[in-house]
Image 1 (cartoon, one colour):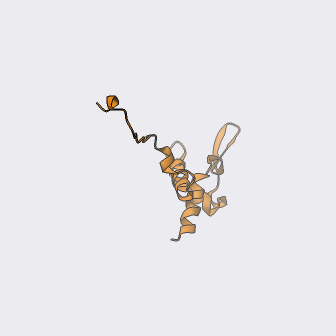
Image 2: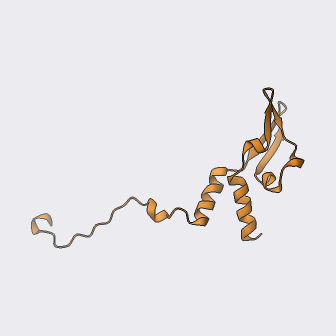
Image 3: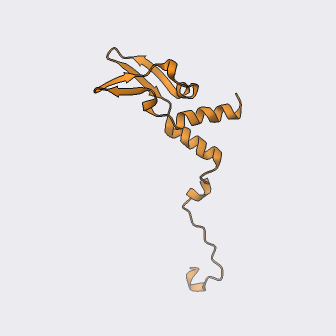
Length: 98
């Protein structure tokens, strides 16, 4: 597996949308035919199961995929998140040094 393959998988997860997999018709939820989904759409699916009352579709964690892409792209520098201020004082009056 190469870097581009991994990035494509992360993009598919990060930008997945439930409307790619279901549609609502006349107030009823209908699952779309998986044969009509693209490879990227299928890769965003974590699991499908029949619950006995319907079909449950679970997608991979979008937030985690976005976080990994942001880190890879360097969009947010972790150093900027640091809230600590460091101050070096020079020439402190003697009365302050006590």
